[in-house]
Image 1 (cartoon, helix red, strand yellow):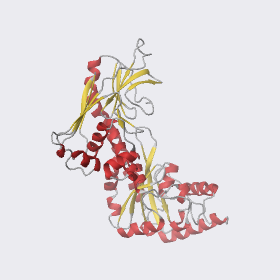
Image 2 (cartoon, rainbow, N blue to C red):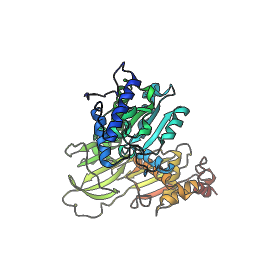
Image 3 (cartoon, rainbow, N blue to C red):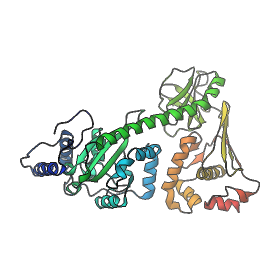
Length: 431
């Protein structure tokens, strides 16, 4: 029971799972009761047990105070997890493990909340009995030693077998999990896990899960590179025309292109950033203008650094005449760009364009669904939309850039306004 440098399986190849489970049960019982243990648990397991005993977690119950998310909160957590874009890759990478019907595939966020799960009806029913459901908290301090929570704490791939689980009711299960890190920062975004009945334990499962997690990180790196490439393709001509210090950065401050500014990977952006003038620790006073998926940042010169208003001339044109290809066009003194929104986002842009004072999440929920209780669903959609249009959409309430000139172009026959939309506000506008 020694620790290896790589992903460590719970039992060695060829080892009898039943016999090993009996040994683990004896070790578990002795450890939890303070008796003499016939062997020492693996280091990763022993460390986990000690953490949980220190916290006073009951091995018979776990932490019963934890509650599940509702559906709307769950959807928002999925969108904001940083894992949404790679879910299909995770599922494909582990399809062979879950297709036999014995195992369940689970993706959790960095807090241990179950965001997605996949498996046969039979194994999902068994998972339901444990509370292993979407929205449930499987952090280590909630349900004890498990592959999700322990992988997140230890920041390494782990396989947990039978009585290595801290909570006794989980002893009939085995699980293998690995953390998924943000390749840009190294921070853990969440974990991927394969779980099933203890009899399905296999030494190679943890290696496969760890490999899929690493591939997922590579995919995130590629998504980041592609995002910066798209931003660079729009920004580079603008920067060339400016012939003055400027940067193009994405919504998180990652630099896509520079002109007459020292090259850097990232800048720290202010919270609640909007079009206008802000101070940055590394660049001083800067003017911010929106780009698709980011910002054009122009350091202000010494002569005008004390000016409060940068004289923004942004013009936003929301063109809804072609129901198949709605467009938003953004123009400023340094250039222009366009974006084709999804049907739902076209509805939102129409509402924001015709309500310049802004709409709260509850108001938008009424506009889109006829139900102000679906505010969280609206927030999830707005989170997606602001990935493309963060520079021109502000929050609290949601609204288009107040200093911009906005034009909404609708069909000459208003009955043809977004004809496929069933949103109450759009139906009312057609009338």
